[in-house]
Structures are given as C-alpha cells and as structure tokens.
Length: 93
Image (tube, rainbow, N blue to C red; front, side, top):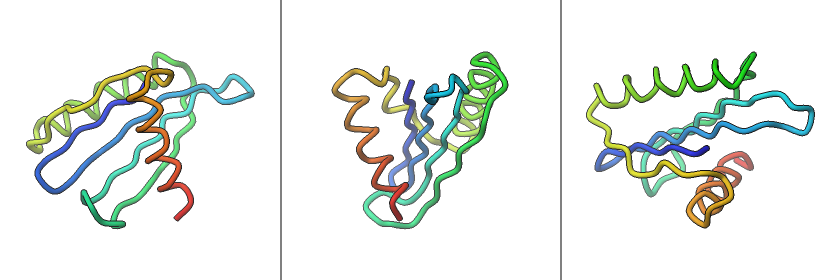
C-alpha cells in the first residue's frame, strides 16, 4: 500500500509492505517537491494492524497540516510502481 499527501511545496509518502522474512515495514518519505531535500525512515511494525494504525495517525497529522491526499494505491498498480521507483531513488541518497 502506498499513500501520498502533498501541499503546493511539500510531500509525504507512506509505503506499507512485507519484507522477504514476513515482517511488516512502514516506510515514510518526506521532502520538498522538485528538490532533493527530505528524508526517509523505515519502521518495523509488529503486525499489519499496527502499520495501519500508524497510517491512520499519519493521515490525521498531515490533514491537520493542510496536506491533501493525492495517491492511495496498491504496490502492484502502475501508479504504485511509479511511486516505488521514486521511493527507491530516495533510498539511494
């Protein structure tokens, strides 16, 4: 699952996925649109339910900050694959 919020200048992207060992990973990328400023953080969730709870918390925070949801897709969709490509570029920085 990939969810992205944006303002006119900033973005936050959340990716919830399962690794090869079956652990649930909650990845959060953020930054300024069109620049390399930002960051990337990965957290290990105890369960998928915990990762979804973190996602709900993130949605509340971003909405309160004036961000709007612009993407909410599964990993295997074309939109999800493009978001993953962008996330992997951040991981290389």
